[in-house]
Image (cartoon, rainbow, N blue to C red; front, top):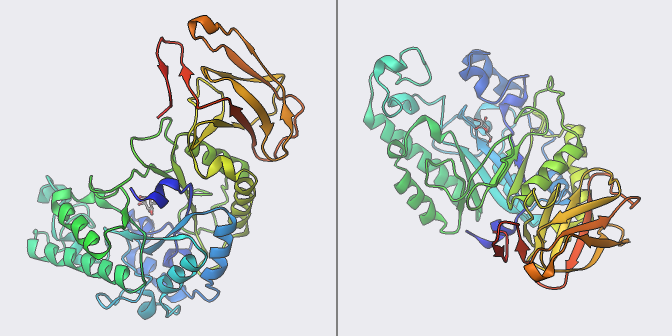
Length: 428
Ligand code: GLC
């Protein structure tokens, strides 16, 4: 895994497309029959990108503390946001926007010093060639009622499917060679066909032949580099590297009727949950058709940025924290394993407690103010290796408006006694 991704803590996800014109969900709305395909596609006429200014986005994302950005280059509807010679279904040809939106995006993100990610849907519900094979294991009868799952003419046509795969490869070739280095590819929709049908092994090799360092997300039927849990934060981090993606309201793309926004505090808390478990967050925004962002989304990004910049040493360059039985809150651990950062979400009553840390504490401070806090122990039995409970007298400390971070400096590298006999040296 590339070092930059291991260190990255926050990515911004952008779902931008013709679906921002009406009030419908991205691609799924016609797939699920909430709108006809024709009406869905009519949104092309209203997609202007008239205020599209990715430099402005990039400045906001940077301020939010983002390390990388991932934008949709094509969703399941098949409408490309980039200049492609392999299909006329692109915003240059079919919408008043009339320009290559991916090009400007890539340049702006790179210039602002963030890594460049591109989302590409493997599914293309507009292309009849996509429907030229049944999902593996399915029979013709299984697919007859599913107009989008079944082959266009009813019978499988393996040659057409091969053509479709070639088409995907060609578009990815364009994305990976026309805009300089693409650091990460974010695939979606692998689930409708098997690894075998997608020729995933060869596909992965092909992408690496274009850029050996490109990072690939997990939605590649077992051939990706990292896991992508979505919307519900895992209680325990998945194995290996992972990224949790989430919307700020309930929609990936812009929907004017969706007012179910999470608060900044909730998003910050979710971000803390991710880094506590050793993962990272990919936070989604859904720009309006003209390219501007809803101010409620901007506000969340700004608040998250304030929180991250006030606590950067607890966020970047740290790893997975204590487990939740040791501290009833979030935490991270410095790279040298000599400092614990505790995330305190509620106003403390008396003292906060930490269990199972054997290395003695040297000093505790509130990170954003520098205020020093008193601490003490109960129940330590040094002769038997029982560390006892560390109490941090935090009542009355000056809290951070979103979540307060306590910096707990240890006398040496952290060691644990988790109470069932074994003494371990680190958590991961
Ligand atoms: C889901 C949906 C899709 C969205 C994606 C983001 O897989 O298919 O609409 O783009 O989640 O993670």
